[in-house]
Amino acid sequence: MSPGGRTDLHVFPRGTVNAQVYRDNILDAYVRPYAGAIGDCFLLQDDNARPHRARIVDDYLQQETITRMEWPARSPDLNPIEHVWDALGRRVSAINPPPQTLAALASALQEQWLSLPIELIDRIIESITHRCLCCIASRGNHIPY
Image (cartoon, rainbow, N blue to C red):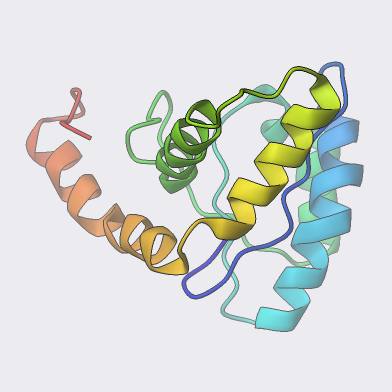
C-alpha cells in the first residue's frame, strides 16, 4: 500500500512464510512491479521479521535496486500495515454470518481489502511521522497507537 493506492492482497493458503516464499510471492510478484511503476522515489517499508531480513531477501533487494527503510525492532505500533490489518480484521469480524471455511475467509478478506476506503489507508500512512515523534518522546517505550 502507498498513499493513494494499494496492491492486491495476497492471501497465503497455508503454511509458514519463510524468506524464499516472501521473496518469490511478495517481493517479486508485488513489490518489484510496484517499485518499477513508482520509480526512484520508491521506498520499501517492511519490519524486522526473520523472513524479511534473510540474506536471500537482502540480495534480491540489492539486485533489484529496491531501497528499504530502516525500521526499529519490536515496533508494531509504528508500522502502518498493522493498523490497516486491525481495520481489516474488524470488518471481517463484523460479517454475519462469519466465514465458515478458509476459502470463504480468503474471499471475505479480499472483498473487505478492496472496500477499505483509500482515505483511511492514507490517514494511517500520514500518521507515521506523528507516531515516530511520539516514540522518540517516549524514549522508545510503548506509545498510544
